[in-house]
Amino acid sequence: MKPLFAEPELLSPDLLPKGYEFASTACGLKANGRPDLALITSDTPAVAAGVFTRNRVKAAPVLVSQEHLRVAGGIRAIIANSGNANCATGASGLATSRATTAAVARELGCSPEEVLVCSTGVIGVPLEVGKILGAIPRLAQDGIRSTDAAARVARAMMTTDTRPKWSAASFRIGGRQANVLGFAKGAGMIHPQMATMLAFVVTDAALARPVAQSVLSGVARRTFNSITVDGDTSTNDTLLLLANGASGCPALRADGTEYRRFVKALESVCQELALAIVTDGEGATRVAEIEVRGAPSDVAAEQVARTIATSPLVKTALAGGDPNWGRILAAAGRAPLAKGASFDPARVDIRLAGTIVCRRGEAHPFDENAVHEKLLERHVPVVIDLKSGQGRATIWTCDLTTEYVHINADYRS
Image (cartoon, rainbow, N blue to C red):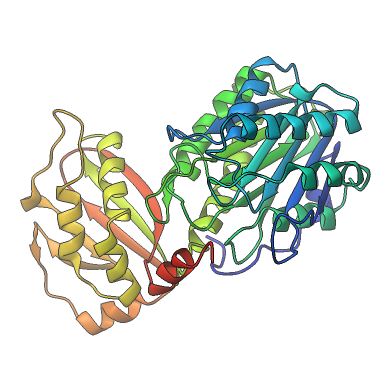
């Protein structure tokens, strides 16, 4: 894991995927005047895949982007605004998202269906689309393939984030280098059941659409779907992958060494972005890695880990560095396991920051002051061994502090 609570390293020009341009601006959606509109364009139609929120309340841009992915042969652009979610805004909200994609399409000379749209911010407030439409012509003209422009895209996506989030990786196909670059935003309302608040990944590798969708769904499950900040799944969660083939590398098939290299690079980027989100959790001072072993199945392990990771009692204990392992055991015991799956509490072992504190379901002697000090570190490993099977899973979460309450109590003020 890279150092926590820090901005990403400067993006190397060698890792910038070919065939993409980046632009951002402040169009006036944010009262503080900070950048709030970002555009990513591909020189040629890119193969695209997407994973979206499972919340029954879906924002207008989610519905429009899902529709465009179904009908478009390729995708030329992603446009995203921060400062307003354009959610629970009815027919006018859908019209706003469609007007946005149409305006971008006019500038690029493509069809509106070749443009994906995303929004993030306050729910239930009409989006002032005129500000976006007025900024799009200049935004499209300002597009450039540069590391600075790419970094500014990450900043324009931010809402309550305290730092921008991007990650990059490279791999080789047929003797040539291909690159993967990802952006994400998110700090609160993070309990993904698909991806995160917003995450965009672009690559100059060539992929077939079924391969792109399959690999993205799998990687999302192991990365973005394995984090939680506050147990709230957003209405706008969107993870998008564009692959334009501009590297000139041969198209990847769903097998072989080169495909595995791509999956490794993509997962590396998504994992770093996911951890950056949970590290930047609103008010967070540390990240806990909740690992469950010995479960009846991997699914059961995930259910137990997720229940522990979302427990307010566990998360507040983490905030205080309190080695209160009883809260962890209690949370594991109430996890909604699938029918037929169970474990014996009398066999459970728990380790906090490398120290065993519970053995066979009962207290195990430990130095409480020493463990308290370890729990105040920024990365806290928590291991729960159920000793009831071979299943295992890991979920990353952050502590729950009073600052989280302040941020969300004053969010609209």
